[in-house]
Length: 90
Length: 347
Image (cartoon, rainbow over all chains, first blue to last red; front, side, top):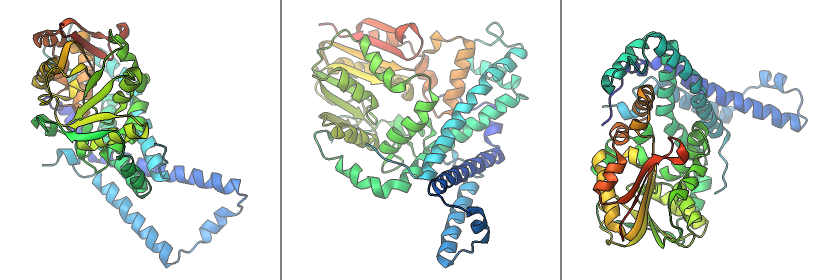
């Protein structure tokens, strides 16, 4: 087998906070990407007044349930980054 | 197979890929930090473990080294998870097509010899979540998502063209039956089939999930490959049954003893006058001390438990020990990557 991590790299690997920050960055990028796609699609279809309608929007029960489920998935993803990586768990 | 990921999967994979690309900017800074600490070819230890400790101590306060380690860790742990999640988003649409492509002229059968060598479960190679068989569709996930969207964007040159170009090393174009070791999802196999259209293609791999993707790739193109699920160390196939035994970027993923075993098995499988061509990562003997240290860094962080013992092996000597003649062990085209060992079985 090859050598183990050096002490310095072990310390970096154990820094779960940095891994958490990177996970959040990835999730943030997914959202930014989606917003860019959405803006592009709406603009191409001549949609106007989107910002005001978003501010005023109140989700109905089905939409709220969908948002709740997505938020739970998001939290699970974020907290997984705080745990030991699966290939290093005892 | 044409397919489209959903927005989340596409954006997540591209984020990870670009994140990995971004790490290249830290490496010159780390080299500068190492040099500033007084470490160079003269002062770096000949002993590799001691050399790693020297560099580790020199980089203890290097922001660039800390950044690279954090980013490498994140990419290593997450690329497989993100790719699997991207697949799962479109699984319902793809699954009928993936299942249909398993019907066709290319077959998978158990290898008569050893099915799964013990070292195959030593680690998740590349730190890919679950290893080669970690998902029901790991072959598609690795071959189409990780390889094309992540690996191909992070390695220099065209990694698919490299698989074709290396075949120019071979002295013959009339091979009738070719045996590939480590077929995986079939990227190299496709290049072999294109370069030697008259040849019957056999391949093997200990991972059934990866072979299933090779089967789909072949069936989609109407290709007739005979794939064996099992190890190349002891195939149990008939001696003297093939003209060429070849592998691409497999040797560094198996231990030294397995390399010797595969060379011996290749010699046994070849008809007199046959050839081997095994391509792999750069040998440590062709790198300077700093280069070996970087290779070790990438191996240890990248989930490559056998890289050191494999890259330290003298492939020319190993091939000759297995009985091959006219042996060449060198970098392709005068470079250092990909490395290859060629050998000929005397007529």
